[in-house]
Amino acid sequence: MEVFHAFERQAIRWSTLPSRPAPEEPRPVVDLLVARDDLGGARNLVMDLGFLPETDTSERANPCFLAYVPAIDEWLRLRTVSRLPFGPFDALEAEGVNQLLTHRQKTGPVAELDRADAFWIVLLYCLLDNAVIDEESTKRLQELALSARPDGVLARFTTRLRPEGWDSQSLIDSAQSGDRASLERLVGDFRTDAEAGRQTGGRGETARTFKRTLQFALSRGHGLTVALLAPDGAGKSSVASALSASLPVPVRVIYMGRARTSNRGRRGSVASGLLRQWRRHLTARYHRFRGRIVLFDRYTYDALLPPRNPKPARIARRWVFAHAVPPPDLVVLLDAPADLMFQRKDEHSREFLEQRRRDYLELRSRLPGMVVVDAAQELDDVRRDVTSAIWSAYSRQLGKRASNRPSPAAQAP
Image (cartoon, rainbow, N blue to C red):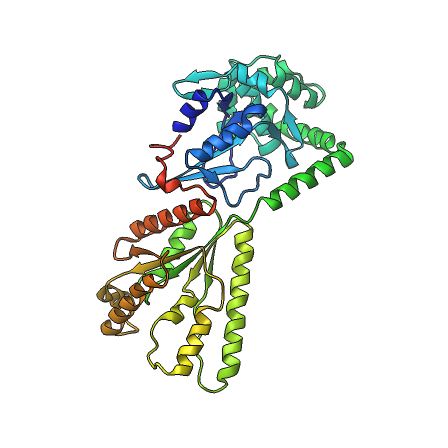
């Protein structure tokens, strides 16, 4: 992977970390341990290679970085850390990261921690993070225990936390024997003792937690709003559902279409319509601030289409609605032939749908940033094209034009 080669060229001290036995992330993430003094340079280098900070993450101090590779339709996720948190609230941290990195092993471009250190990390994951040792974890620990040593920074750290009656050698022996029952009994006592140690942190830990929370809140606001435009039958709802299931960050879908109103009570309906659109817009802004991607099913730009009854008053009302709320970050037009739209949804005639299709395409002159996607393709191909547009918009938003950079990887790390 290019990131690994770049780290070596820049003499950054780093290593991959063992994967957690039961990761909570819905999509795999590669954890990279980096020396504290090199952490800033490593993160800048990752972004220079086309990765961007993840929009919504539960990690306050250890953000994930994302890159979308259209050629393989994959999202790559990296997380760079300079400390090893274990247990609830990141209260328990392993010491001596630099010592761990001096013992790392290289296999091609990939750097891995020494297996003796990997044993203690996986054990701490099981005891403090996962709070369970399943069959797969037992086999993994048994294999790593063959290389484990009762000394070293992680062994000493673990020994300070272990319940009475256990020492580092007995933990190694238990894992090496594959005695799952004894390891399971250890979990409860280990977790209880670790929690008791965390609670002794007092006000200092409270202050650190508040600081991390504040930094996390100030770093937000990197979500994205995307308007999906198209005549009925082009597949807006299907594309929105496919994106919700595939994007690596939370997605919210908000309907922004106008409800038809009768002439009776026209003044009140205009006012209520504007209020309704602003309520939806503010909801979208909230989700965007929280780092989510908001998909608008339709947008106020629909009011820019030629009305069937072009009376001056109607044109004026449509202009007001078209400019009622600020623009989204990205506008995507799903373009499909009238015959296909009619097959999918026969509420309108083919002639009307073809005219509407031309009307939407003419909006390109008024919305120069609008991206047109061929919606006659298979749904998965449409989703990939819209995903690429979203990735490019997100890259521009953060000042990283990843679409003009070399692909961050030809294959997953």
